[in-house]
Image (cartoon, rainbow, N blue to C red; front, side):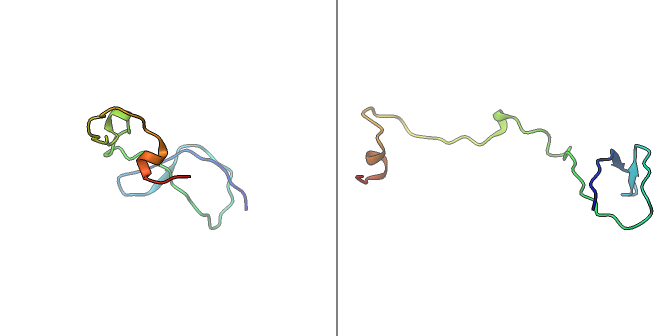
Length: 71
């Protein structure tokens, strides 16, 4: 088995259209399609979920105090 990378696009009839000429022989192939979901848009840090913590009342934040366990 051999792996090659070829640029292509999906047309309006949902057919794969190769954008580069190739010298591939006829036969069966496996295709993995990687694409950018335009509807979702790019993820930016501003779109990430944010935790809403309470007020910090001071003191220390040691592991033993947070999880109530002693090592």
